[in-house]
Amino acid sequence: MSRYQRFEDMPVWQKAKELTVWIYQATGNDKLKHEFSLRDQIRRSAISISSNIAEGFERGSTKEFIQFLFIAKGSVGELRSQIIIARELGFITPEDSERIVNSATDISKQLYHFIIALKSGNYSR
Image (cartoon, rainbow, N blue to C red; front, side, top):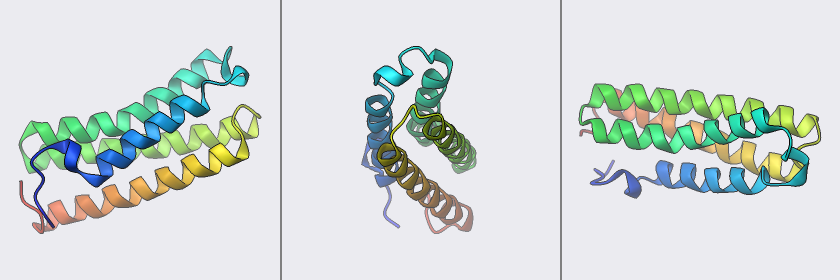
């Protein structure tokens, strides 16, 4: 596994950032206009993913990096749950929901494999 010099170069961070942009677009509709708490929680969960990847990377130690990757992975699960609920309530289209959930699932898998690589020593800081 190649070594990254900046968190911005990490494919998983790039995917998480892209997902956050999709989230802001999908939750900017009139249906969620007055659902402040759900809309804001969805957005916070999404932005937490890329933010925790970046913060963990910048911490400098592998142990802390792994910890923050696990936090990011937890935020992915939180986001998927919220999106499914928003879809069932009719606040997000099935198409947006599917796109977001598929992307989030992919990010979760990438985070898992990166954590395993860090733990096994196949990737060093």
